Image (cartoon, rainbow over all chains, first blue to last red; front, side, top):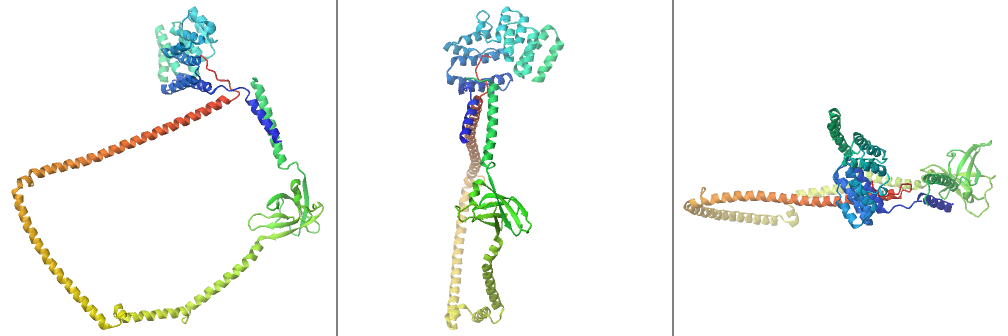
Length: 220
Length: 331
């Protein structure tokens, strides 16, 4: 009877552990990076946000994978695009200089909005339709393609990229505001609301601009 | 090999259910729920202190229970006890069944078997249940102690009677003490009692008186010497006064040196205060430094704890089998 128990217990354990777990450092860096992204977007205190980013870098450095290290730097740059901040690219460029990964370099060019050099096939799948619309220079098509992106962060990144290159309309700004609002991302929400307010003021819609200003004041 | 999550969950539930059922069955089996039970019948003249469920024990171990109590036509109480097969070897043909009523605790039936290799007790035999009563045993044992206590009390009574009797030994001793004290009081002093001769005592008293007179005279001489010293002091004070007048300007009340001394005294007092303040500052800074060290240590410990918890959480997170494998991707 005891032998039968042991056998069944072992079988249960085997059934539960079918997949091999990821290495510790990858799991840890992934977790830290996800926390950094979330903290960055919800506008948590910068010191805490930076701690998670630094820890993610430290974990990646344990593995010594330059490709992954580049991805971490590019993630921060992408977040800066999403909240329309100036890109801090020097660290990524150092990584690329040490060991260039084609996909990373392509994504860097994408973030810079370099239409001529980006290889669509190397871009992450969600951005491909957007990039085609963006390359055409049509704001309406770009807005539609942004709305079609499933991942909310990717949607904000695409919107940030489009607006930075003067492909902007109200629909696009509205999509960005709704995306940030639905996910509770205060930092991009404030940025995009301010952008929408400026757009309304430029269009002469003072009432709407005032409403948006009130909303911004409430949030601060 | 990567299995689908639905299959894994199904397999997990099936195996878990099977394990639960198997565990219950195993426990029931170990508890003897499936083993054979033997029922024996005992008889007793009274059903007092007998209850259904009462344990049947051998050498302190419970081997069975009373399952039923009933009264037959002859007015005898029949007691049915159930013994599981694994304990049945304790019940032999020569087994004696005793109702044990301890002073503390509930009664139970004790089985005493002298020969465990003897033939088994027939299920049809009705054995008689005898009684063992701890309370009566204790009373029997306590009887000699009570007798001893009784004798002690008799002795105490005799002593107190002796105390109360005016012609008793104790009262005689007290009377002797009284006489002795009276004799002491008739003498002038203990010295007389020691020496035994009143004349000698008188001589000693006279000698002491003379010694007292000599001491008084010596005191007078010393007082006179004191007076002379006082006069010498007065002369010296006058000399001092003259010197004071001469140096008045330097050492006088408003002279330079007293003022200078006052200034120095003030300065000294202030320095003492500053010194105390510096001491306090030193103490505070030392305490602050200590506190900082403590804070650093606390911070390190907290860091270590948080890191350990984080690592543990990460480890658990990493080992959850049905979770998607973490992968760092471009956003």
